[in-house]
Image (tube, rainbow, N blue to C red):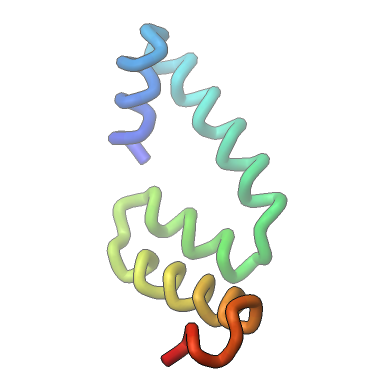
Length: 74
């Protein structure tokens, strides 16, 4: 998450403290809108975990697969 905070600080030309507050606010908003299992994966990914990415992508494709018919899963 430190990389994201640094990016926000740099791009928005704000202090690290302000960027941390902004990132935490946005992440809380996003996590509140996601199912708990996906929210947990997003948190893990932002904290530097890479296994969360495959779980997040896999979980999203499982949930979205029905929207595109059976052929999208093959």
